[in-house]
Picture 1 (cartoon, one colour):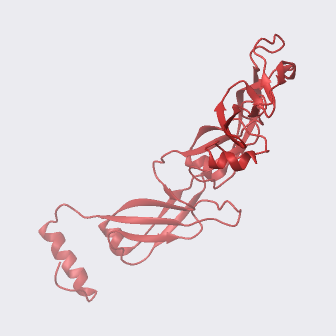
Picture 2 (picture 1 turned 120 degrees about the vertical axis):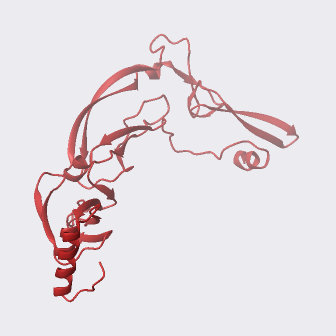
Length: 259
């Protein structure tokens, strides 16, 4: 009946018999594209607040405490009608229990603890994804410890741009390569080199797909793709002789007389 009347008379949140958690903590984890490609492991020291050893000796009975930080006050509106009002009270540590401020066994409720954490970054992890350590945030009386979230912050790369499992880069090629084809070596994020070949004519802003040269997929099933956008570097000027030779070459190949 208390829940029914609190619903109609503004008594606050619905009662939840489950234990509350202390606030979770989010920490940015800055990673390079190389680390996200190959994976990485970090050892980190984390400082948190934990309950002092004798904290339970500082808790006393308090029927008005509904949960941690919440006290319930009942007010009779009319015969047979009672309003239940929730109020914030930091002394309440759990249902039916209140903190005794004068307790000498544990005057500050918590104490500092340093813990060692091993952060494992799996290959292919994406920007804004999280590595979660459950129950590692600060402890508070009457609450389970919240979770510690390390949020991946992908740093900008000087060569490659990433979109999910694919990589992108832009390359400038000379006009002669755009007309005759070319081949060049690229160094990947883990240091291995591979060869990219292009035959025939390459238009400006042409995009070449290199299969399997993107980021590793998080499920371990292969890699994404690499997309290379080519920008053609046209000469600023041509001599009369160069123009004649070009016209001659294009004419011999069955091309147009127009330059």
